[in-house]
Length: 269
Image 1 (cartoon, helix red, strand yellow):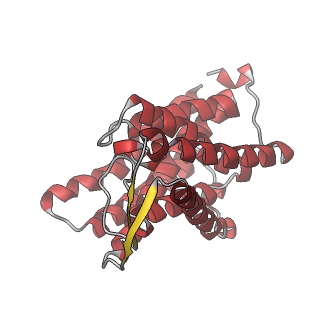
Image 2 (spheres, rainbow, N blue to C red):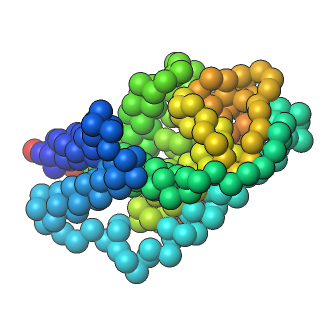
Image 3 (cartoon, rainbow, N blue to C red):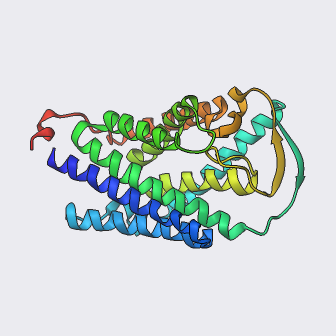
């Protein structure tokens, strides 16, 4: 239990440290610098926690498995493109035009910095530490609910949007971690999804306003299908696609015997 409480403290400290650079925006600091610092501070904070508190090497960030980062990125890009294709085929997405906005670097840094910050904290710390004490499924529940609650603070958020984040991203990204025991895959998935959402298709990212993108288009129809003002994360289509991918990863985890069962002996102080 002591290890669990230290892990919770580490999660809070690293999450706040990663968030801190965003306040530089009040001083009109470039977003490229802000999100670069967000990712850098988060990963350094995580490595320090693992080394100083857990006294081990961060094998979940091993350079020998970094190939899962580009793999996850490609899967995330394809996953989101398929979502947009289904919405287009169903008449919920209309393409207005195409272009090339001069913000590709900031889009990459935004998506990657956010992915690193959220994955090393929610999956690397909160999920992993909870799993070690209470087992995989309690770890998924705790980290997914916390992830949904934090995203409920975003613009245009609602209870329905937070629940969607829990069912979609919270479960999928945790499964990506415990199926592979590396943070590179969930970071890649998260990065690919956010980059496609923000720069390629220019739709709302977790409630934030859409920005100029490669493909200019509009979403129409019921918020059930489009996610409404919060964005596609709260779309039933996105939840369904995430459920399929989560199921695949869970099957892989079971086959690889990566599911941790709850054992009361772990709760001893």
